[in-house]
Image (cartoon, rainbow over the protein chains, first blue to last red):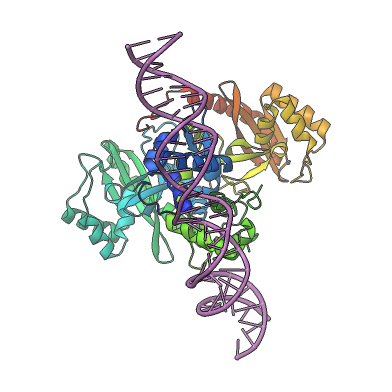
Amino acid sequence: MAGQAEQGPSVTSRALSILAAFEDSSGSLSAASISERSGLPLSTTYRLIGELEEWGGLRRGSDGRYQIGMRIWEIGQLAGRRLRDRAHPHLQDLFDLTHENVHLAIRDGVQAMYVDKVYGSRRLSVVSRVGGRVPLHASAVGRVLLAFEPDWFITAYLKRDLEAPSPNTVTDRRMLAQLLAEVKATRISVTIEQLRPGALSIAAPIEFNGEVVAAVGLVFESNRYREVSRFLPLLKGTAERIEGAMLGVPMRLGRVAQ
Amino acid sequence: MAGQAEQGPSVTSRALSILAAFEDSSGSLSAASISERSGLPLSTTYRLIGELEEWGGLRRGSDGRYQIGMRIWEIGQLAGRRLRDRAHPHLQDLFDLTHENVHLAIRDGVQAMYVDKVYGSRRLSVVSRVGGRVPLHASAVGRVLLAFEPDWFITAYLKRDLEAPSPNTVTDRRMLAQLLAEVKATRISVTIEQLRPGALSIAAPIEFNGEVVAAVGLVFESNRYREVSRFLPLLKGTAERIEGAMLGVPMRLGRVAQ
DNA sequence: AGATTGATTCTCAGTGAGTGGAAATTTCTG
DNA sequence: CAGAAATTTCCACTCACTGAGAATCAATCT
């Protein structure tokens, strides 16, 4: 999934593979390791790093290591803004009601990617990160996103090697297919300790133009499973309100545009 | 501040100027307008757009227009993570206590840039956007960030043309210098209708390693000015807690690194 | 301190990737 | 349905990019 080898001979692809080198890094990389991760010759790497830094795409720390620069962050904020902007207030409202970790995720290939998250300081289970990804079959949001994909996709997905992040992760194809069918029918997914021991999560789909484009989820300790029934209607309500918000007037769309 | 003309002859800088073209756009741009904004010849633009799209840096909508792709967003999430991660829970807690719009901003050149925001659906004054920027002298967070800059910076800042986003914005140099001194002394900034009529905002600095690296702010309706005194201690407390969190153990820093 | 290792910067001649004007094609617009 | 605008494809020229290697610089070891 990472950078190297996907670069052709084009300069652009080389520069991009440098950015890609950060994709599953811990945040800061030395020039040498960027070169290694991206598969580019050292001198080339240095030249490109220099250009990226000058532009603001990379930032050099006091230790000489590089990090992604705020300019990339800033431009990145423009991606997928519609969903995030519309959904966020409702995620916040859900948090107000429950004070549990609230997630918003979309599908990115064979993984679910968290695009927003609301959490306070009390719940410390900060395992997921905005921008982070998890396998589709091993989380409530992921299962929702998978369940509403076309059959051919689900079939192909289940044919792959299914990783088990937690000892309790269901990886049995037959069982998963069954569970996914239930999720699709009930429009709710409840998963217990699939991603991490001790955590329980529930999720609901968000539909737009007849397609499931995202999923809202709630995560809390698995020993509080009794509260699921209390949270389910709140979660469903949130999903519906987000769907409504997605349909609303486009506001500032195309004002300055050309 | 925007893209064009900053590109040298290098391919990389051209590709980057395409991304920069989106910086103050409404989100989606046609290929032709990208070409215009970036100052690149049409055919060159098309080739580069194609490469960026293939990589995931751009996304082509059903209308043929381009948007920033999720891959940029995802990589962008890695920038400035430390501050955002440490601060966020406390911003959320502050929102819990006040239910007013909570902001976290850093300085970016002569502007304040919002890097995080907590808000629900009740307060609708969604004027600021995460990733958005405002002039330093016209907002509470901005004034905090400006007040703690070295004198030469403040002097140079005040020499410039000072825009007035609201009819009440203070642009008088003498007056501003005075206000900034007060902000620095009290470690609090209270601004009324400086950015937008009807809005009041208060802000406090966040210090790290002896430097002010960010500011927390609270925004609400200006006719509720009486509540300022109630919010100030909460705001100060939040700022202090964030400062504490910044000092904490680095957690996952440099684990996978190399 | 001197030696060793590794990271970073600089140089430079060869060359092929990038360039962009122009023409062909498709898609809007009135 | 004409006319304009946006998009796509083409291609010969050439200049920016390449990357091995040498030179610095900065730690770490003996």
